[in-house]
Every structure is written in structure tokens, then in C-alpha cells.
Length: 72
Image 1: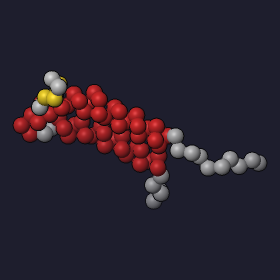
Image 2: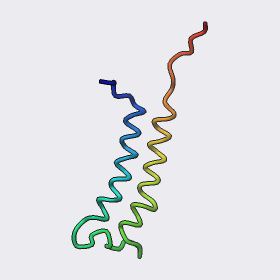
Image 3: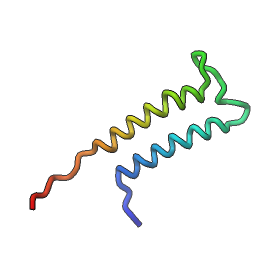
Image 4: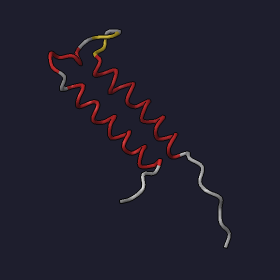
């Protein structure tokens, strides 16, 4: 089994953000149609929240410092 690295954690988080959009749209009684500020919750999630969380997760896990450079 491969060890869990911070980079794979970031990939899992990005997948969960995508799945969250599908789950929010599949909620019963049109829950995603509830409006906040004139726009539905699904729009707020897919247009604002998930992209911002995705950018933050990407920056966090891609900007990890690499180990010391080894000279040959």
C-alpha cells in the first residue's frame, strides 16, 4: 500500500468538492433551490464556494516546501 502524502490528500479534497456539487443537487425537496441573495444555494456552491476552496486547496498542497536539494 502506498503511503498517504499531502499531495494525495489535496487530490481527494478536490474530488470531494466535485462530488459535493452532485450531492447538493440531488437533495430532496429541491433544497439546492433555496435562494440566498437572489441566487440558489447550488449556484453559490458551484460558482463561489467550491472554486475558492479548490484554489485554496491547490495552493496549499502544491506550495509545500520540498526537501533539501541534494547535490551530486
